[in-house]
Image (tube, rainbow over all chains, first blue to last red; front, top):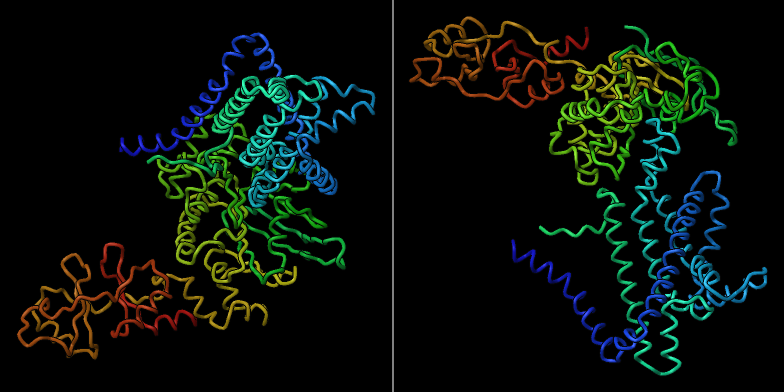
Length: 254
Length: 369
């Protein structure tokens, strides 16, 4: 018994441990550590900007995405929702760099600056919102019609059905959308530097321009760690948000 | 017993498609505590008729009265909360535990927590699932039959006087279905709800219903007790729908008690064998039913199969399983008679004491009378 649990733990933790080891080795090998220590105040500023980019754009994307996705499932929206879905699907196929470029090119046309943190946030938001809308819509639509009929027949109001039945049952799918979005945003955030949005992209692109692996690694490694951190946090929060009755990827240690 | 549910010329017209009347001037009254099975070929409007009662489908014309109140004047949500609802595909909420599923209506009715807990506990006991084992499980961890029991428990949780059941056992395999039907009838004996039970299976309709409401193309063809429908089908449609074997189906409606004869030829197994020989010579019967001191069945004595060395009746007794309790259906009884060579069946009570015996002639007589 104890051996089996031990073995399971090793099996799950070994890849994580090896990845960390590899990153630390890359980090120190190219002298990124020394560069970071020398520029520690700038490092903290970039980390802060980077977090702000990801957290703010994701927060808005979840808020807007889940709301829009939910509204699209309401009966009166039946016709409009397919049109919105078509737009969302096209939008999602635009590559990350394209979204940044679009914001840079489009915002001046409607009288806003295309440079700075706000345009970067807008670009990231639009990039993140698509998978969330799509998954919220699909998640709620996939809740069994029998379940809804039973709930209606038992005398639950539309609001009660939405919050007690539809959203909780769609939660695994919605959470999947949020995780996809987060992965995309964490990967796209360094590009924000290109339109003056700040963040760790600054060191990455500077390193590439100067062919200085140390500076580049000083930016790239924290980006990778932040990505893992976000994924881990979402994983944990899913445990609380998704009911055991609708979870599919239960890992059992017996 | 007052009238609990009354449909008065209830009609449903779906607009478009030639204004087809899905349900046409359907009227019937249901007394408190009765089960009414609504049955008919598919597309006959039986589900539509049922769903108008909790207003999942609106009524085009006519009235539905529940316990003296016209439902069109009641608040839809409150009306639905006062009617238990069970559907074919159960529709348990996957995100909630079994306990939470059952507690949903009481919570909507704002009962206090201890009353809800008590209710959940009691309902799980009623449907024969151990509360401590099942309360915290999720629907996906239960079998189909268990899920449907929870569906029934959930529908009863708010103490509704009326329950609507839409082919509740339709998706369950035949063996479990029969088991659930029997269990449900036992529960109904205790709770005495007024139930509208939709099914497409005439056998289920006969078994479950106190009244059968037979529909065809939205029209009421016959509304009567199962016995009446089987003995006096209104027209050829009813006769063909209940089937050519309708007389045999009636056997299901009665228990053995109704047809059996008292005073079977019983002999105490400790008597000397001469007593048996005497009895055989005086009458033309071939078999005697052997009992012990308590009157409990021990076996059968065959006139042609008494060993020469026998001194006591006991020595001539062959054990037998040609017996049934008085509560069994006549259908089972007839089947048992045909299974054994005796030409009759010993009828016993729950402790296997001999009460009477049953011949095919007795059944025939009863079906005639």
